[in-house]
Image (cartoon, rainbow, N blue to C red; front, top):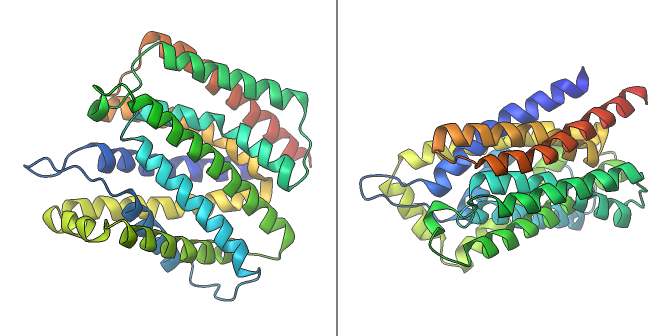
Length: 304
């Protein structure tokens, strides 16, 4: 029951996050149809809202560089995720996250010296096969980049970056929880403080801060979407950290499957991102395999 409650919290909060993420990054604002292009500004807003809600635990319990490492990998992962939507469809970006088990297992082996069962490797290969077939059976480039031949390549590189950095982030968070007497709020506060600093430096150095603020001034309605996006990301982060702390990074990676499947359904309905029959057939093994993994890991956690 506890696993189900954690899973429901992750799914519901990140469903809202997914819809607003696609709305902000791919749909125009105002009569002049301005497109929001400032991924780091979204990251900064997300992290500032999270810091505001996590100020209850002010004293760090781990060396600052540990928080900084998680922060940097998290900022890079989130930026790759937002940027990928400029080049590939939301369904492809979401389905690509099903491959999250692979980097989590790799980082777990390197950092935590974990050993995984053969079943886990078989499931990972099955997911990867489904993703490769998905590429070949329908449109995968975003509407904004549809005419550009290298759009899918850039989108794929960004998604690989997301998977690598995100897998590192959740595994290192798992390591911090195991190595220090650290509360969820403590990790949220210090990781997001560093993330806010990294995002702000990135915005200033790239000259995106003033254009992003000018965009908000021209289109105030975008600010409400960004705030709700940031709030839902914060709530989702709470559930994610509780899940990682209590059940580990691999179960979290498996739980995300339901959210990803529902996100694709909502995206198709709200934003008109239909999948071909072949893509539905090819994505089914990935979701089925991940659902099976969630069930098996859930049973293991209940038995332990």
